[in-house]
Length: 215
Image (cartoon, rainbow, N blue to C red):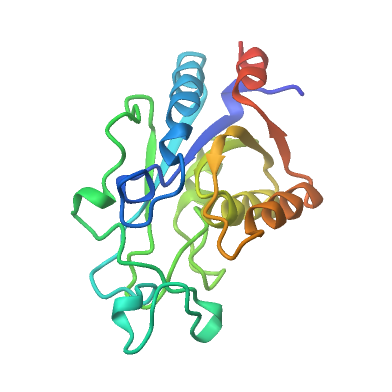
């Protein structure tokens, strides 16, 4: 694996309090992604690479909240395949904030997504209509990025959709295997997501391997 650090972006996906232990939509061991992402971010920044972070940023009453629909509960599915979740990452709340242990000092770009009341967003690149851009693609093309390395939460949703879009847009895409954790809802979704990404040509590498490549 050969990486041109000047054309490499580390993308830290939704490392927010609500997705970490104790949060409204906690991913098991979700805060386990922080240490490897911090190490990679520090090295990327020191060598001339770029770092971006995404942030779920929902208004109250968002379409993805089960509480926004009568007689619905988390896990139910409504029109267009929208899965309903507990209220999470509501704009301006502690749950929407980045985890306090995530080092944001190296971050060049923060993308907020899912802020439209009637449209959810899993991918860092597009809202869930697959056409409304978050602005990330344009931002990193201006940085002349060729390779996107990503980790964060959760493997089977926002990481999956972000990685698939990154690959589809023509970026060499690497998922940091020890810096992702999954919801696994419905059961088996993490395994399915991993297979889908591998079939698409997305590379998996652990942070130690990537640090060797970067250094």
